[in-house]
Length: 162
Image (cartoon, rainbow, N blue to C red):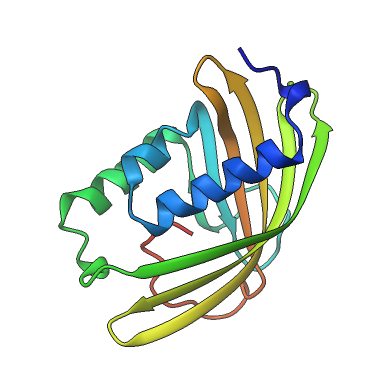
């Protein structure tokens, strides 16, 4: 089994690239398999750092809520995604470390997401924070926090996975 102390920048980048590709291609079940059972998917609003349990967030999903989101996207009944968004993510500025007190590895990066849906092209810029954990399935996410640079501005339809 892989140990988190053995994860280098190349391995972390490969994980981030795979995660981005799965989202871009709508492979939501494969994307869900990248999560730990206690995983949290968080997109803050108006600020990048606050207690999401006491403040509003764009998304603050635990693993069960995340699975509900995936099930809706897979059902064909996510009307806000009809037609489905076409997306392309570019990941850059990957920084690996430190290892956190709980043993997870912190990975920071930046990304650009281009989305086209119903004739509207939108570009999102963000910083993202991943906490990665090693288990028998390999590297998995216990946290994905996406800090959109325009999280204090009106946002269009974000029913896809950012």
